[in-house]
Image (cartoon, rainbow over all chains, first blue to last red; front, side, top):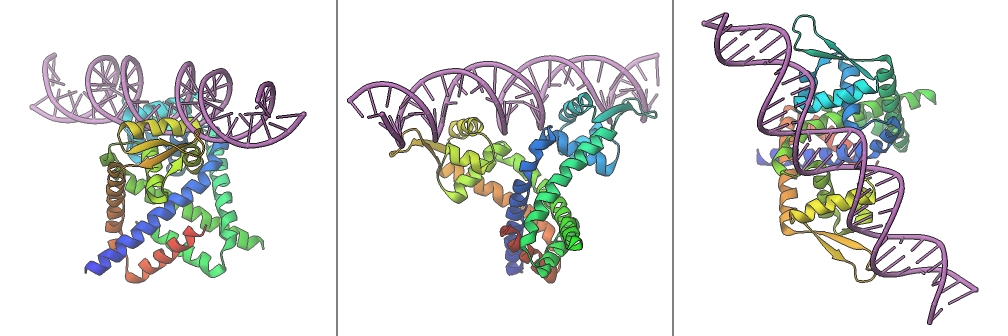
Length: 141
Length: 141
DNA sequence: TGCTATTAGTTAGCTCTACTAATCAATAGT
DNA sequence: ACTATTGATTAGTAGAGCTAACTAATAGCA
């Protein structure tokens, strides 16, 4: 029905605003990482999803291949990522995070999560349960 | 207690991932806006919070004044925003959204919200209630 | 009043992030 | 073997971020 559609739109709007607000809040922690947002985001994918080719990573990050190639340049120069040419198809370039890269990414994520956790002190146990369940639902989106 | 702290950290992590996922999902709609993310975000603040000076907007957007001055250049050139010098303090430059700017921003936001609302069709009424309450809580962050 | 310090914004110059177009190398398909 | 396709890079442009340096206006005060 139309009213259910309207309800979904209202909730979508609220979730959208909330997500913006939340990320805006933790973003200030990223200055300490010393690398830009695109490099940080690409590194995050490599850490949590494992090795990817340039094309795969570009698709995941919603950028074009040349952009990801440049981002990889920066990460390689900082020794956070290594380029390997794949054995089966030598056109493909596999990107693998280094130990330093993993360390830098995890430290950055920890700062973000810690900053957010601090804000969560304002909530009751029941409210936290609601937030937890909502997060689980959003994962299903 | 330490376990409550750990719980908050776990939930913070889940919310953080969820917010990233959600915004990544709707971001693809922004290509249709024809302006970049920084201009879009600044315009959004002007639409929903009203006129701001360059400095105020820079603080809200977590960028430095020169960056916001450049963003304003782009918005003014596209006639989405107008610069006025304030009457009381002629150093201040007030930025005001134009009718076109408002229209462009609202259309873009509508695309985002619509895309998200579409995904919410997968949820039950009860799950939507959980999401709605969570969004309300996040506003309090 | 006039001198100085502070504040708001812009300009200049750098880096990073994004795009398209063009190119190179390797693979796949006749 | 020739051609088409695919994956990545290079070149060139625009947008978005920074610091440093500058201009203009206001504020403070002797």
